[in-house]
Image (cartoon, rainbow over all chains, first blue to last red; front, side):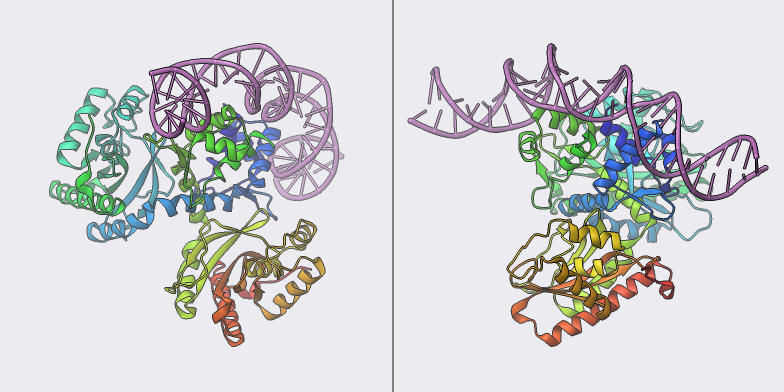
Length: 256
Length: 256
DNA sequence: AATATGGGTTCACATAATGAACCGACATCC
DNA sequence: GGATGTCGGTTCATTATGTGAACCCATATT
């Protein structure tokens, strides 16, 4: 791995649960030498990607990241556009609704709304979702470039539960059904006891760029509720896509 | 400069005005060789910090940055907390209000509200503000660590206009006045015809972590309006500081 | 008093980054 | 329509850059 890759993988050790880490800890988790880790951290702090707490000497993500992320958002207002609709959907379904954006080979959770239930599906911002074993992933693949789908099916397909589909043929079928239906259903493919529906949010070229999904404990989910949520999530995804593309969703097309 | 520094300075070439750039363009502006630039971009795309447009082959900031920035925000909800108060202030002053966070040696603009006026002060998200020649900068320095102030005064002090203070002694005086008054005033120190007031937003340890500021065309700004805005911006900064620190602002202290 | 862990530093060594020259593709221009 | 410029992207010998074992000091733990 190149040096910049190493630096970035240091950044990726920070999570919402562990937002600040010490030097030795970072070295241990990354597998890099302590001296290397520190040099990388120095380079990162020098550009504001990492900050060091004056008292505890622990490191955390820096303001430079916020800055770049906001420059990105200013050009492509995915969050501003989508969050209100995520909230609406969360209110009407009374279940966890999460919004994801595609990045490299996974979906990145960028926003979550949780219901008031004590028993609910909990998702953290920043969580990465695999493509083959989540409702969001399948919804994404249903409207992704063929190359993306191929690369996904050719990669390693982890079974997270006993219900996870891992045969490429089965996943392909699921993708086809999703394309016809307009939304995906994933029954405990990622976590035991969780059932989700999702729909793709699409760019002007017709390809998916992210997803919106509803995740609920299977125990209280009826078949009728699945359909109802599926239609709702599809409508929300369509509305977000239209707002992102200046209301001319009719131009959406899919190339073979 | 180390390799990761180079990679980051590539990212810093993207702005709200030029959110997508081609390979040759990036190489030219960064001063790196085209091959080097490309390798850096590959490393960055591999981790989702940069994305490449499939059609134009241009590069833009990627979803990985949004992800990390949101992880940071989840832990330290600066924007969520401050934005409502920025909006209130913008409504009551009917002038441009902007929010900044400290990063490395400058202030990073993280949010802006513009008034409806045609003649107004325009500020972009992501814009970097120097410490010595802006209302925000002086407000920050008034409650910054002594080391930070020293480093700033020892650095190069650009004169952006004929009004910019560049003698360390004069800046020190301005900082002292700001500390006593509670808010800073900057009369055309950064741009001709613009007058701004700002106040520091402070962390639990009493030191500044960012600022909130009102910027207006000098032509329509009366001395009375300055005082009024100064008090308002100070109140907003205080309220944001309190909300960030669980309402116990009374613990704020400044070490010598 | 002994031991473990933390953050941070040093320097001989080896890996990883560099850039001039190159390619093919597409515009533009007498 | 051939010459010219620019674009994105690639190659490979040269060299700068990053590496990590061993080290230091300070603070907990036992």
